[in-house]
Image (tube, rainbow, N blue to C red; front, side, top):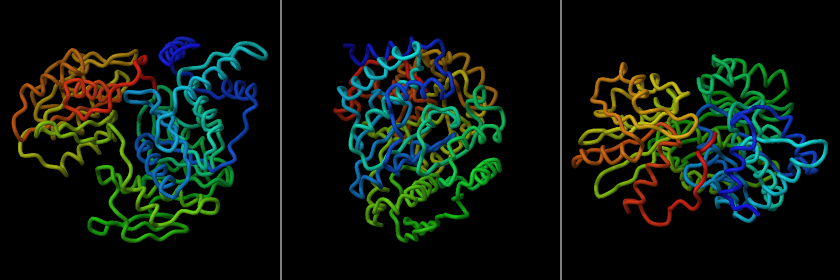
Length: 442
C-alpha cells in the first residue's frame, strides 16, 4: 500500500516522457477496467486561457441548482487533490488511492504492461472516482490541446473552447489555426460546440460544421451585455436579466461566465436549472491564483498564474482597472518554454520594479536567464532572485505604504508564494499544504 506521496513519485517516474499525447494507452487501460462512458451530462472545456474560470462557473451553477458535480482541473497549486473535486470538495485520499490501485493493476494485466504519464494517471483516476460517486454531472477541463488529451476519451454532452492563443507550440503547432485544430478535437457529431471568444480561428467553425456539431458562438448564438454593475445573458434557450457580477475579477470574466451559462444551458433538457441558481453560482466561485487579492497588514498581494501573453494582457487590464496609490512591485517566475518576452511586453508599462525568480522542475527557468529574455522589453529596475520565496522577501523588504506586490507567471510561481506567505502567518490559517508532492506537471 503506497501513500499518496509515494504514488505521485511513482507516477512521475514510470513513463519515459512527462508529456506524451495520445489516447491509445488510456483506451487500452479503460478496456481492461471495463469502463463505460458516463450516463450523466458531461461538459468538456478546452482553450488556451480561461478554462479554469469557465469550469468554476459551470460547477458552481450546477451545484447551486442542487446537483452533485464532479470537477476535474489541472494543474494544482498546493494539493494534488485539488484536481479532482466532488461538490467542490477535494477528493478523499482513500478514494484516490483506490483508483490508483485499480489503474496500476490494469496497467500490468492483459496483453502486456502499459506505462502512463503523470497526467494520464490523474485523468483516469478522475474518471474512476466520478464513476463511483453517484454524480449528476461532470465538468472536465482539458489539460493540453484537445484531440490527443487524456480527457478526450470521454464523449461530452457539451464541448467548449474558451479561447485560442499561442502556447505549448512544441506540441500543438506554431499558429493559432494549428492550435485551434487540436482543440477542436473535443467536438463530436450532434454535440453542441460552444466558442467562448468573439475572435476565433475559422477552423473551429469548420470542424464543428464538418461534424454536424451545432455551433454556439459568443457574439452570435449567445452573448452578454453589461448593465452598470449588473449584466444580461442572451442565449438559445435563456434570456437572463439583472445578473450579479461574476465573482472572479476582471472584464474577461463576463465572457467566461456567459460561456459557462451557454454550456449549462445545453443541459436544460436533462437538468432543471433556475435563474436563481445561476445567480447564486456566479457569486460562489473562488479560484486561487486568478487575480487573487490578499491584504496583509495593509499591503495588497495579488497572485496570478498568468503565463502567456494573452493572460498577461488580461492581468495588465486588471491592474489598470485597479489603480494603486503607490508602486506596483512584481515577483515573476515563468517556465522556460513560455513566451517571456511577450509577457514582458504586455506587463512592462504597469510594473515599477521587478524581481525575476528561478522556478523549479524540469521546465523551470533560471531567474538570470528569465531576466535576459525580458529585460529588452522593460524599463523599470530589475533584480534577480534565487527562488520565488527570495523574490517575495525582497519585494516585501522595499515595499512602502500604498504599494502592492504582484506575484505571477505560473502555478509553479503562485504556489510557493502562497506557501511563503502562509508560513509567515501572513495568510489565514486553514490553507496549509496537506501533502508534499513532486514538482507540478501540466
